[in-house]
Amino acid sequence: MLILLEGLPGAGKSTNSGLLYRQFERHGYKTRWVHEMERPHPVLFFQEACLSIDEYKSWIERHNLEESQMGPVVQIRNASVGVDLLELAWHHQGVLSDAALKELQDKDVWKFTIEEYMEAALEKWRHFAHQIGQEPEQVALLDSCIFQYQIFSFQLANAPKQALDQFVQALWEIVLPLDPRIIFLYRASVDDAIEHLRQARGESFFKQIWERDRHRPYYTDRPDKVESYFEFLVDFHHTALELLDKAPCPKLPIEVTAGDWPHYEREMLTFCDLTSISDAQVNYTTGEFVNKELGFVLQVQQDSNGLTMIDPNGNKHRLHPRSATELYIHDLPVLLNVSVVERIVIEGANLLNRWTETGLVFTKTT
Image (cartoon, rainbow, N blue to C red; front, side, top):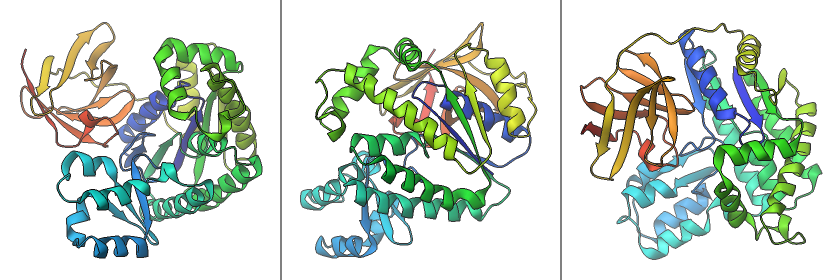
């Protein structure tokens, strides 16, 4: 089964992906949650170079490299090779010459034309669907993948809406054998959605996205100010609703303005043929945990909401028991292994934030 969660940024996709991830596992399903910011991402592109097989072999030969040297940072697919540029920068800086690295950076998919992107993306989705199809009993949760990332990519490029429609239809054809279902979280008023996002993430979030994208074709004939990003979100919302209407699978749209999350959660669980299984009562060590090598600090606390964690970026997350020695993070597919007293080992998915790297060890200081 493939569960797709979509909606405007800030609608609750990651939080509710986390809910479903925990509940599917508690019901005995082998479950994979693919977060929007997973690294390397199985269907999207973040900090990833993409080369054809022939381009990759030529690059290896021209720079006198051995394929074994690149093993930790590459993903070999049927017709292409992905290179994790963050992994390369963090752990393998001495492997490549400046010229070899520059060639990879020039093949960062975010620099591709929309036509080049479509070719690379379709191949990546096919590879993912083939892998998931090998384990038909597995549940896969995809957050922001089939609508949000695609709308951003096409809309920023000012690509024709018909091109986006055809591309998303091609994605549906790839994933339909995986028994997909889609949950769409939204607010009827986009202005309300923008204000909610402002309250949740702060004005700096809008400025960050605006500065990142302001020179893209979408903004060419629009006012050079952050409010143009709000126009982008209005267009995004209308396009997402159109794509939802055309989605050839079971769908659950949930209008969340009233904030009745217990009701919305019951709707989602019913849609996924699940019942709610509550957190087990387990005691864990609290305090400050430090990774001295990178200078990262995790603060694990007990408060009125239960066990919580403040990550190295200052973001607060609820924690939930997975077992006597493991904790879920409420809105991230990262796990905390606490099997050794006064130590946390990071497990689960690697995300773009470096503190989520699998294997990082945090030791209790207070």
